[in-house]
Image 1 (spheres, rainbow, N blue to C red):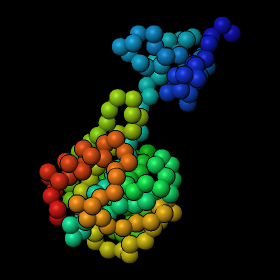
Image 2 (cartoon, rainbow, N blue to C red; image 1 turned 120 degrees about the horizontal axis):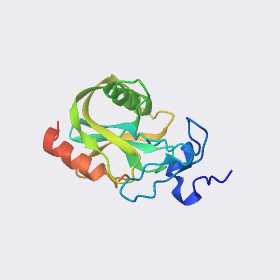
Image 3 (tube, rainbow, N blue to C red; image 1 turned 90 degrees about the horizontal axis):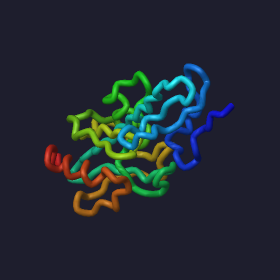
Image 4 (spheres, one colour; image 1 turned 120 degrees about the vertical axis):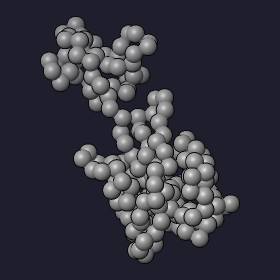
Length: 176
């Protein structure tokens, strides 16, 4: 039992503390150029896949649809409708589903704004532009409130990629 498990400081590997092949403890690589964890017993490399999320910018009458978050992270802050893509789910279907779940509004996607990732962020964002096709705007179970905000009076954007997403949306889709 000479194997050491991963440290609390390196919690990126907590979900993979033991090797799925031999049961040995998983450690971070000592080579700083490669930060993949590996099994201390058999050497198997554990690949930590990023989580994919969809974010949707819905514009109507020169205003963007926003939700006041009822869940962490950024509880209480206003953000674009967004959420995780389920395994096996088509990304575009997840984007439409997330808007419906959070706002009770049906949307049609107009196109991909872009993909956003970086550094130690475990989430990759697929951002889409959309337009409303139906439904009645009401807060869903993961939102405290919903509403449209004028493009020149948006609330503070809570997530690191939001300014880039908004700038790219303005450049590609303008104020549809």
